[in-house]
Length: 422
Image 1 (cartoon, rainbow, N blue to C red):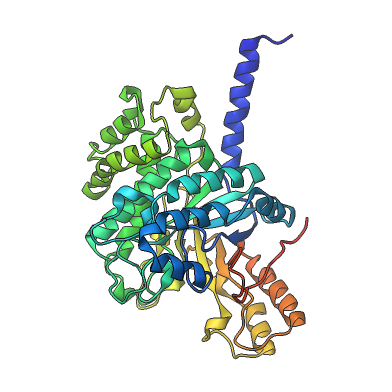
Image 2 (cartoon, rainbow, N blue to C red):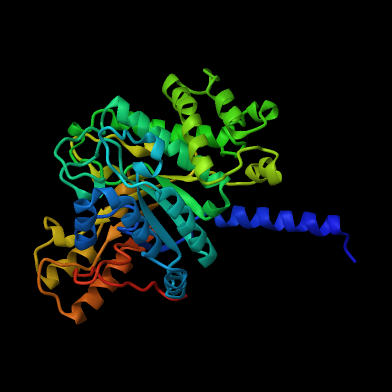
């Protein structure tokens, strides 16, 4: 009979291997966006959004009720049974509460706890996760509700807000590796839908490089191996996560001043978030150091180079370790194809975005947002063909993620899409 020590060791090894296996994306993504869960958009939830806006003194309770009821384990199990293997979760920067300037920025509290609860359920369903920084500090696109504030005053493309976004990215990287609830988080998206005109996004190319460097710096400080990058020695003298980050921030030969400052500034932020989540940051806690050494790095993700025009920076130039690219395509917004069935089908069946991106190093590419809505009154029969045609075209790349997973009663749906069955 095996000894208790052997069984314990086998249990630990099995858990570690499971964690490594889970933290990866499927070879072909069939996914849904959990839209309007943690970032509300009034086109999906007009009544709830209006109610929260009208009663700011009760906004936290209102939003927490929404967050806790937007989906249940049975919903996720049904998605899994339909062949869905990935979810993309849009997040606002305010989910990391210490980053919010409460004197001028007004967002509900408690989202990080609901994210963890939801991630546990998604993990239990065996579904991979992409965390999408959907709403950036300072707002990254004008007059868009998905940014968390519909305004023309775009301030994301400034050193102050770039820095806050990098701290957010560092904190989410750390949580993705440290918190067991985040076990199936495989990818972190830097920015959802920046302004398309690259002349209006100064500094964005450097931000892309800094984003990847922050993710990798945090991972190296945690002892997570990154292919092609030498490991850091800070773990040998660090007893906990914050000490390792502090030591890494003092390595001028490896990281430039902005990356080192981000590592330093994220320490108190991560500490506060860890307290919210009752997360232990000591390396000797339940074999954390050994566990981290067996993990895989996150897959960094960007909107593809062709998302922008006017001489955009190429996110492929920022690549260190595994990286993927995202494209969004909504025919109903116009400018893609003439508003009729034949034009829609002809265009999507001859779509060349995957090939054009690959020629610029933006591969693998997935289509992270798309839907069934059209510019014309489409029949149910056409919508079935329209769904199949889009899935077929997008699957020539890394896969697809439809939007949204659910909307409020009375709002036109973009459709439910079932994944191909093996």
